[in-house]
Image (cartoon, rainbow, N blue to C red):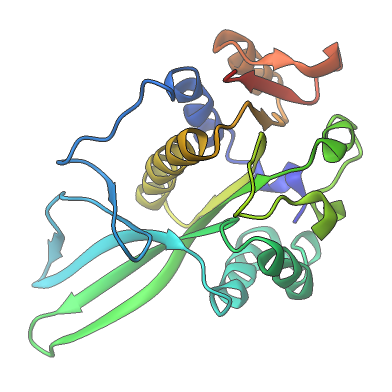
Length: 230
């Protein structure tokens, strides 16, 4: 998926960037988001109720079957020509299934007793090999150029992480994506001893936000920015 398209939600991405400098100190309380045994990040916020229809947003690591719907959601927002093929997403997934995270809206109807689940957003956090960093700094780089050799497996140390994108359908969902991305990054940084997080802002405002929140301009080329956690 074209990184310039994925990062079109500049406001969302840089809400995350604003939070990154304090991720080492960021802790989730028991009354906030927490990770359960099924890798679902849940919230104790009361469920929304509209006309006795209850719904809640849940975040979890994507399954292989989710990739089809992830691609379709991306296509519905950005267009087919700007979304990576399903075969590439599956290649990444096979190398590291913890790259994709989904936001699903689960709607329960007390009258019928049925619950429906709908994918409404997702984000990508890619642990990358040092060999990819140079490519990330190039203006013409596209996320579809990432090969499985450039991705670090989940069971290995992940020194470098790339925030590859966030996609959401609707303002409320976008807020949930940001919240869950922050909590997921926090957990990964602490568990994997991450040294550097990378982002590619695509607007001048985005670049100024990177600088404001102490991201360093990689090689002073104004394309790739990084935040060190060493």
